[in-house]
Image (cartoon, rainbow, N blue to C red; front, side, top):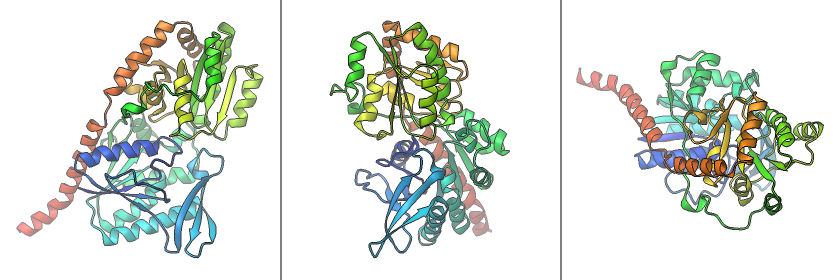
Length: 419
């Protein structure tokens, strides 16, 4: 089964969680018999990946592509720096780079044979549709997030939404990362539910990535505060309306009123960075809330932020899946997640709350900060649940649909040959 995989990131490149998900998903698909060629929109050192072929979508006159971000939070604000063959450089906006990516993929399918095309989110849809038209291969689109989710339940960017609509309508099959995402696609984009298969994400961790890490923590000052009786709550991710951090700050005002020795560590960049700082100050929380800004999503500081917490909170307004609770559990920190997240469909040993219910969110946070036994029980049970999570079931489902569509495509040819 030769798969043309179209994605926008892989480790060590990290903007959100999609790169890690694609890496782990492709690794399991390769174990299941998929021969994957992964096309990316930039160049990087991928020598650590030996289970699939990786191609950077380089335009003819470009030697290297370097990605950068405006605001550091959203793909639609992304621009690229091209290093040309003569050594000079020039910038390329998202629209131009998507066009170049699509041109590269269109050329690629003319000279290679693939069985299926598998494309991740709207960024790759233009290229995916061009590849489908050129090759006739069945197209699978994998939805990790929709513009409805990214805008916190609103309309969002109309151009992105139109691209999503066209890709979803013309795909042969849609993989959604949660039942909630499937329902969003049906409701917001008018897609027949029979066309959509739910394939939940998983997070697999190597032994050295789990919470037995005993190295010095980057946030040693927070550890000292814990020794002085403080509880530390952590939230990590992009600072956007989708993530519901205004609701967490409102809840934390109640937390501090009941349990004054409470600190909130907010990790990540985003367009709401300054807005959230001002909101925390207006709530009288300047002495209780710490903003780290951007941290490398695969680096030690990122991992240490999870390790130092007594509780991790993901208060998302609309989250198709959400992998940060898995990272928290991997590092020994219990999690509280909103019921509006896809991961709440499969995680059992976590606390859950409606994102808008600041009072109940505060009650659950205080319960953990004031009850060490509850913290330990949630952490231990969550860890046991985590290590049982694998990609095998989802990969098996995807391979089954690959084969079904390939056989359906070949069936008329066999019948014609027989006649």
